[in-house]
Length: 321
Image (cartoon, rainbow, N blue to C red):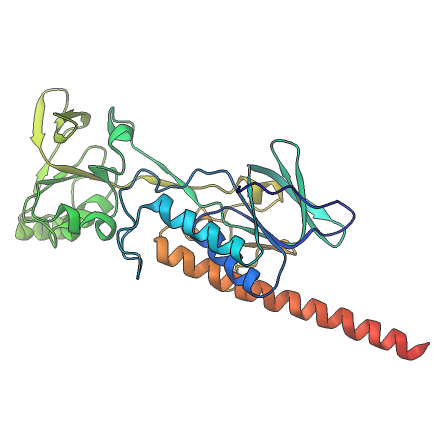
């Protein structure tokens, strides 16, 4: 079973409590468990990429189903003595010798350090049918889905100026790309020239729905009447960090929309670290995993310094007796 009960509350139960069981959290936990640290991963079981058929660009695991990748990660963490706790962390705060994490079912975990790797959520434009096709033929990342969509009819639903640049990029995978301006402004002169040279058609009007035939996307309807044929729709969602746990500690997002961390993942609250998409929204699976691994290494080094400092103080106290 994935569920582990928290240890008694008479001191830190774990060296590190990791909240978030995606690539970042599991990678950090694996590093820490292999460093002989007591580590627990709390996970609510809501991975961002669950709807995708495969995770791409993951060396050695190209195209692996996202849930299979996470299952393998959990097994690896447990194989080195780490705990995986199924549950939802709702608040965190300072406690004696570390931090305390409270779950929505009343359980409490204590740790010397806290690592938050809760990821983000994709907020889609308000167009009927997008959510139902998300991760299938409504996608967002050319590097995640472009190869599978090569040579097909692609439409880009633009909500801001970045949509035009996305349409230019998609020309690498298909010569049949149309830019649907939806709520985006007219491309400026430079972009308009580039789009024309790339063979990208620009269509005005707002998307009002999708046309699906036989469980397959065949087009996008504009202004309830015009039909734009396509085999896949590329949408740039609003990336919303799942940073409620960090907010419960008094950490606020900066102007870029994320909580600031240093190069090792330290936040502005002592003992609290963060890694992965919650602080790096554009990182793909391998990038998030790399961030988690780096945070795990830095956390262990931080704990070693604390352990050594304690040992030195105890040695000095013994010498004075």
